[in-house]
Image 1 (tube, rainbow, N blue to C red):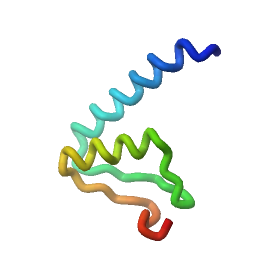
Image 2: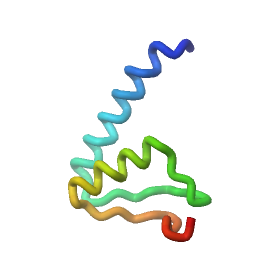
Image 3: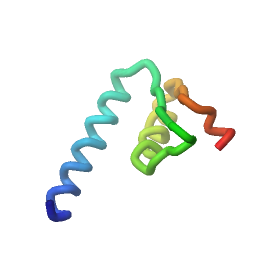
Length: 63
């Protein structure tokens, strides 16, 4: 697949995730080995703006 269709698809998925955050009570981050990718970082920032709780599989302060 060339890079052209990836950008609209990625934007759509990001928008869907934000809609899911809007209807959720809290966010749970599955950060195996402490890894948090750029998309997840964006979702964490969005969740913080909504003042909802965020829980992590692994403590992010230890990574």
